[in-house]
Image 1 (spheres, rainbow, N blue to C red):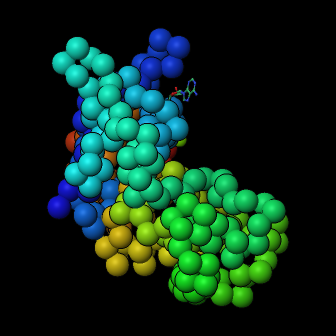
Image 2 (cartoon, protein in one colour):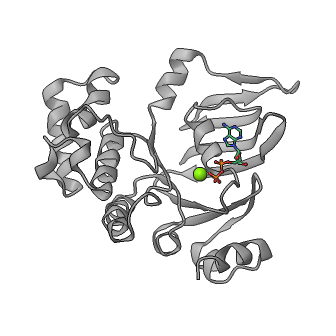
Image 3 (cartoon, rainbow, N blue to C red):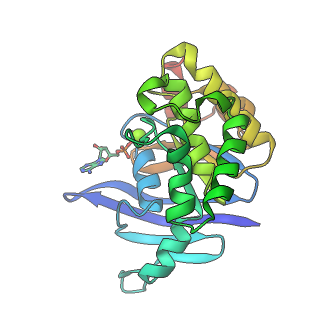
Amino acid sequence: MQMLKVHNLHKSYDGKEVLSGVSFEVKKGEVVAVIGPSGSGKSTVLRCLNLLEKIDRGTIVVGGEVMADTTGEGKVLYAPEAHLRKIRLRLGMVFQNFNLFPHFSVLQNITEAPVHVAGMDRSKARDLAMELLEKMGLSDKADAYPYQLSGGQSQRVAIARALAMKPDILFFDEPTSALDPELTGEVLKVMRVLAAEHMTMVVVTHEMNFARDVADRVIFMDKGQIVEQGNPRELIDNPSNERIRAFLRNFS
Ligand code: ADP
Ligand code: MG
């Protein structure tokens, strides 16, 4: 079953095109890693899906529901506001810098959206949050505040917070890039657990070992386009494309 379809996505900033016809699909339960040089448009794709940016052209379909489409005349039509918000809730986002609410405890960070956006009963949201914290190995941090956490702990809270909304797809934008090297492992570990549970995930990452071992498919982006996508081992270990080879040389 198809969870996400992005077709012919175009996006410009100040007349400069940063996405030039990006198309890909994600199936239910699939883990897709997105790799590519800095500035290639990876975050912009996620921001367009997240409605933080409007697209200039293209189609976005989430779980069979059309979020945005483009007419024959090139006019972009978004779903009505209320419907859009509902579709948006199916997409979970985890960012490089965690973006936790600093004045909320860990528990409040996780229960805020389920209670105030999804209308979940407060005690149910609390139970769910505790369950997720246990899964993240952070049961003892429920009452802590973000400033008391390490980067790795903060990112695991951010993952729990995203999961609390029970998204259909979880997007990660370089989730370990802001972490000290010794803390990336604990975040990648919980992501591996989610992948093993067949959570549908799209992970923008520079962690090539993670992409190779965990992803079902790798997408390589360069200069606003998907240059190639395919089997992680073939694409990473034996790339035929010179742009991918040049990119990967920076990691060895
Ligand atoms: P990546 O995540 O692959 O590093 P980005 O999607 O962040 O790449 O950026 C793609 C291109 O778009 C870059 O050239 C970047 O400078 C440009 N860009 C991103 N956001 C903006 C913005 N808000 N205004 C102008 N240019 C932007
Ligand atoms: Mg980026």
